Length: 133
Image (cartoon, rainbow, N blue to C red; front, side):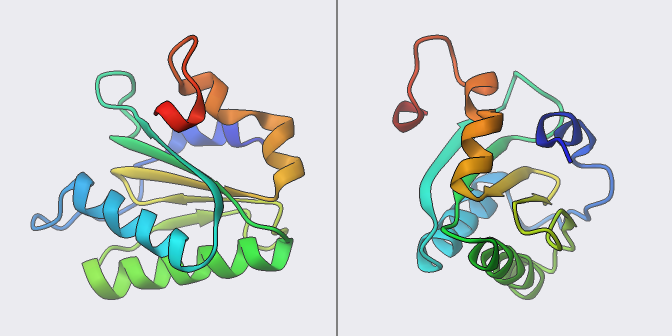
């Protein structure tokens, strides 16, 4: 599975309630990832750069099990707190999971897989570092 190519399909199946904004979703996602001990969380503002969503979040889990667990918990909380069904891909392998909420695209990687794809480098401005995004 290639996260860079699959990311272009974001937003195609997720439902979007009218009372939630992309910023509210982003805050919820960042909080959920932090609560579940995600590492190296990076948010990338896509507004004006891509029609696939407003934000992208990239995070790491220490193991395949943690990646799958964090992803499950995030999808469940988005459904219960926002009534939002998210599209999820890659959970069974646990190396990389894509969660498509429509407005925010979330990638959760094992560290080795994240280093291989270097997804942030494709979206961050030239010269910017992950912590600047």
